[in-house]
Image (cartoon, rainbow, N blue to C red; front, side, top):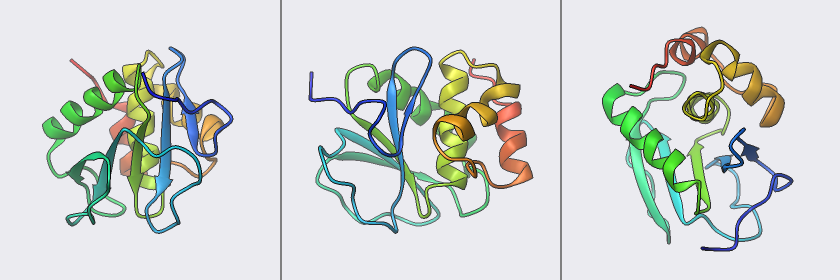
Length: 144
């Protein structure tokens, strides 16, 4: 097991299970401290390479994931790996797509879908999940 982040690490959302996931904006400098073991980049185009394991989920700015089945698979992987690894979810600004993904992770962790946006806004950032269709995506997120 690697050195983990904690609930006071900037940008880290603590899920009810105790799993920790860092959200961030890729347009900002990398935060100080340990780097992720695994990251998912939510971008409309191929992200720049990083020195740790990462996945790219095609997700244009202010929109929804292009492939929703792939999004569910990637989010499940993030949730699973957050039990033991430092995991990060990141988009350009760190609010809309990142907040939406974090809210979906909260649903995977047991937060009712209709409460997940409020949970992420309280624990990550008050402006997370920016658009009405992102909020609807979270409300309808049903991990089967």
